[in-house]
Every structure is written in structure tokens, then in C-alpha cells.
Image 1 (cartoon, rainbow, N blue to C red):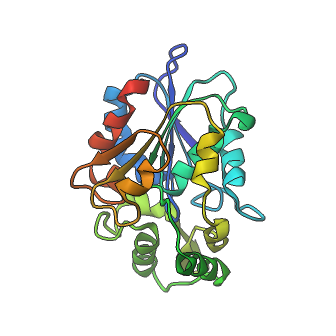
Image 2 (cartoon, rainbow, N blue to C red):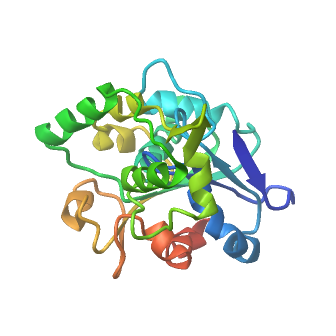
Length: 248
């Protein structure tokens, strides 16, 4: 399901906001007032496949995530994509020449560029685990925030958490399909080579998942946001939104 906001004036750019692994499009809810003031066109906020209200895929790949998003786009739109973590990789897959998607620019925030064998094994183990059930919303919400990397940044009672939870017969679970963890390691070099549009790779200065040096290996502009961590878009929406100024 895609939420769409903003006006529809001509060919102004459409901003596509893609969330990271484990969370949902509702993570962008706090951006609404900023976008109304500072973004000149519409914005689209989908749930990636297997997250929130979006149906799962039979098997997960970055191209598969991207194709599901592309199905909700109009061919005559100008798309500027801001993707966080997994969403940043999906943004690059959308921007590939072969994808035929009308993407004008990509900002990838907090993309994990280097994966160890142990990290990939752990992700595969998470994908193979059965769904966990919880006795109440509070327990499920706390688990959701840990999986989404939002613990300490978002309250379990925050309305943005609701889209990440499901209640079934009095029990609670995360909305996410655990199998999505099996998507694997992105080949960022290949993804970047496959697109001709402007790309910026950004990270919070305190993000433990990726370093400036790792991002600079790819030969595209790198932006470092002082004092922010992996979820910089939650910590300081205005600072991240400013990365999009050249593409408005």
C-alpha cells in the first residue's frame, strides 16, 4: 500500500521515501509538516514488500523489492528517491537503466556497504526463524523497535509503531515477513555502475554500520551528517531533507 500526499502541479518532482529493513513507511510520518513546507511536489511513501501492509514476496531480492515499488509509480513522473538502509539499495535498483523507472536522482542514507560472513549467517538465521508471538501490544512494540533499530528513538506508544504490528486472535506479532532478512548482501558497485542518474551516499557521523571510507570507495559524492547515527532521518529530519535541495 502506498500513501500519497502533497499537491499535483505539473512536472514538479515526486519524492519517493523508502524505509529500511524491519520498519514501515510510517517511519516517515514526522516528515509530513516539513515536506508540506519545503518539498515542491508530491511525495510517495510505500511499505516495502513483506513490511507493514505490503504483501510478502515468494523470495526476496533487491530487484524484487524495486519491482514492487515500481508497480505503484507513474511513467510520466519525475522521481527523486531517498532510501534508508535497505531502502537505499532498493532506490539504486529502481534507478538502474534496465529498470526503466523514471528516477532523476537517488540519495541513499545509511546503506551498509560491507558485510562479514558472520553477519550474513546471522541474517539467514533470522530469515529462517518462525514468527514470534507476544501476549500484548507493549511486548510486540518493544520487539518491533529493536528489529527496526528504533529503540530509544521512538516510544512503543508512538502511532508510527502500529503499522509494524498485527493482532491475531488476541496475540501480537510483527507485521514484517522474517524471510525478508534473507535478501543478502548488495553489490553496490554493480548497482552504481548500472545507473546514470546522480547518486549521493549519506551516513550519520555516528552510524556504526558503515564508514565514510567504505562509501568513498564507490566514487560517488558522500555526505556525512554530524552527530547523527544510523537512523538520521528519525533523529533529524530537517538535516536529511536538506540533502535533497539540489533535486527540488
